[in-house]
Image (tube, rainbow, N blue to C red; front, side, top):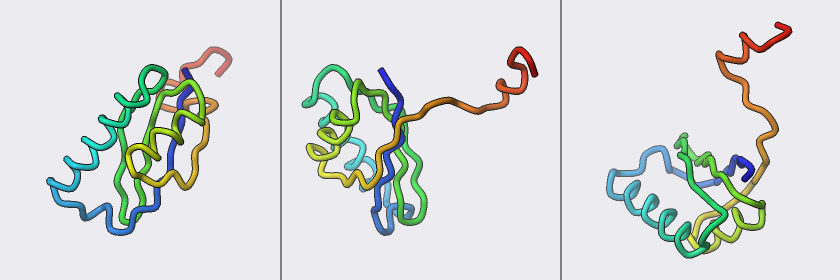
Length: 94
């Protein structure tokens, strides 16, 4: 599976109450079950007016189908090509 970052424009999402966060999580989990195999939600980051979600999926089409079923926007979907983290400093040839 490939890793995707989904950018969702959701005004005020950073101020969601615990109940709203729970409901959004449930909607996403339910949509994953509906879509079936080939997609997995890793986690999301809430900022002021945007939600950044990290998913593993077989295709961008599955990511967009999930968003539709969850009732969430998918303003931008991009495939992650590489990961840069502190361990990258110890890669061979560095």
